[in-house]
Image 1 (cartoon, one colour):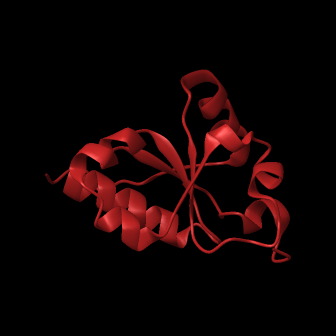
Image 2: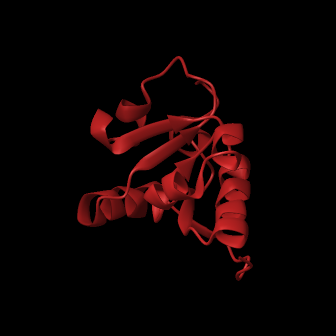
Length: 110
């Protein structure tokens, strides 16, 4: 399914509000960090999912639909933008990329 390739990027404040008001999950795309993602993002453990980008590409469509309208987070916002673009263009799943990734929140000291 092809769609508009415009990627939705949002800042952390808007992402937290979206999670609180609409139940959107934060989806971490990457290796475990030395920092607490939940603490850095200001969320509860129930609001966080973790996947390698390769897992999402090979995930069954029914499972991908569960990620609809979630917020994707990576180190700098590049991988999350690519995953959001892939989901929208190839699978018809909407999502948001956290602008600047985790480094926009905690800097390079992760």
